[in-house]
Image 1 (cartoon, helix red, strand yellow):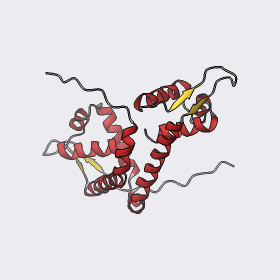
Image 2: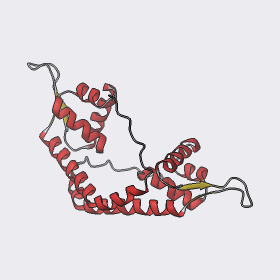
Image 3: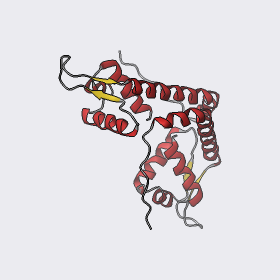
Image 4: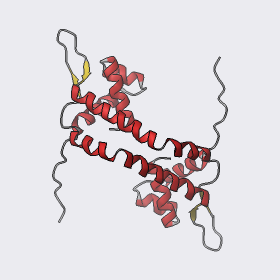
Length: 105
Length: 105
């Protein structure tokens, strides 16, 4: 798991669709499928399940196990970020100041 | 900065050479150069400097500023890891057990 895969899972959860999630992330459907397969392969239980056809015409969802995996990942990400928040503020002073953005009207 | 760039900087620091560092990481020289340029561009001061020719026949080194940047990054990485070490141990139980590796004789 990583930030990109976590975001993909969140978007699948919201939309119930891999293609909608892929589109939302500017990612090809093929790439999204590959990531979903990699996620399912790496965990001991299914994280994403797809119902082909049926009454509701298919649809994709995150299992309860997958929701637990995702919640734990997001929690660790938040905790790790919080642990270095102060350091990151002082570190960011080493970065080149970003150029002023010109806004689109 | 990220783990890959940090590793590249460490290897440049050790070897005094971008090509040796690239080789060591299984990365093309071109790719290593691109990363070094991206690093130098993103910080307010030079991180990597290359001496072309001269008495010592060139060579590449990390500036004092770059060493500070690198040390702070590694410190944040260690701190963030430590903050989630316990969570990560329990999270890793969700992962599929890796297959036993067959060792080369």
